[in-house]
Image 1 (cartoon, rainbow, N blue to C red):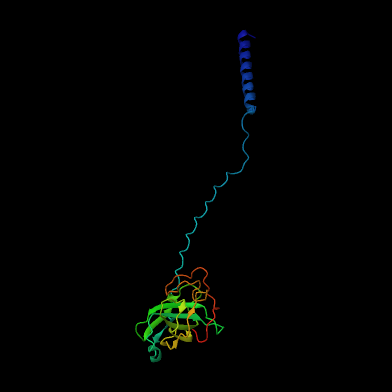
Image 2: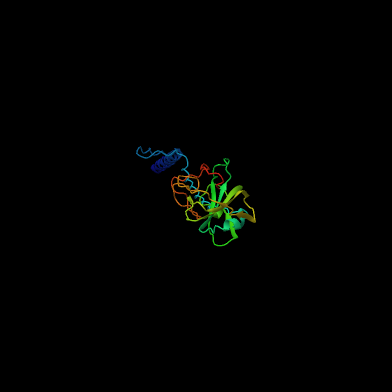
Length: 230
């Protein structure tokens, strides 16, 4: 065997070995790089929390309901007359028209409901009494009431002077029309209501406006009346 033949065989053998080595390296699995101990472990937490729900805006407050209008039928209307017998006394002064609840005690005044101050200049004198004439809120203007009209000579409703002319209707239904109230009685003796009676109490004046009662006023029907007094 010549030298050339030997060299060719060696070259062929080397080539075959190199190919086999490449095939072996290609068949091996790729090496896994080592885990970096400083790296953070993969997170196993669930999805991020949902955004908080915004509270619904507060509803606007409902507007206050307007007060119910007064019943136009809750009125007593009529005339105050001065009979000839009492007209002879020529009464002068301020006329007070007063409405009270009926009292269970015939010797006691009922609770004051309404009062109106009127001029006593001419008769017959028309009048109208309603909830607008209530000086304080102590119930509705309804039901059966006692009406009293008085010509007060000194202008102070807390005092009844001897000789004052007055008249009373013991029972009038609210809603009545064409009521006739006669000033047919005369005060027989002087009287003061300043001792805390139901008219106002405490000696303060009782007017026909809408002012409230003064401190210490009593609204009960407990004041005693002399016989025949309204």
